[in-house]
Length: 330
Image (cartoon, rainbow, N blue to C red; front, side, top):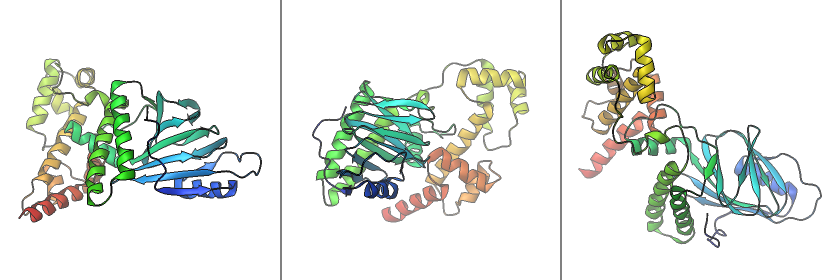
């Protein structure tokens, strides 16, 4: 739950006094549209403030009238936190109340219902930024996607930590200025991302903080050892089944049961992880193409796409950043 009275009156995005102006403002600034215009043409006092962070944005929205807004599918993750009043979000025909004990997470099309007194804080963070942080926390590729449960339970200890960090982030965005602001906001934002990943339910949650693989049948262990020894060579499921001493069907089944993914998915994670390490430790002849081929990717476009999905950034950016850091250190 957010601390009442946190400073939210700075960094104005818009403040309007008519419905027409509000309709234009939410479309321009938030990419939203009215589901239905409120009845009456009375004067209103609707406003939104925008806190720009290094990689994401925080919005505080207060409209003062009953309102329903429709938001399109986006390339960012939308996280709603209650501040006051009563509100709810519709996603795919399901209703998710927004209150002090529950927030909402969405990336798809969503409709948000505002009561006259409903005020909320919305965190918009690009998906690739979230993937990059998750890959760093797990020290491996994120190859299974990143889908969130819409319900963000704010009553858990992890969520309590996240809420405190959000309070600190809002205070810092409002009060810290000068050269220190970039450093402070960047560190707090990274802490916010990490705490959010720990507090929310998503399809990589079980892998967060997992220190070692669980015990598995010997067929799975044999397949893993063979993949680890030959990760940069062409591999087929038939070859793996022979090495494991079982049928293809049995290997798939036991691998999924004990690991949660397929043998070839395990091989892809190893290849992408090795590719990132090679890009982070290049020599003078290292290129993205040479790394892709060395790691068993014959299609450069597919390698770039898989790498970006797994780590949230292009392989060329990793290589350029590493070389840039080496030049500065020289």
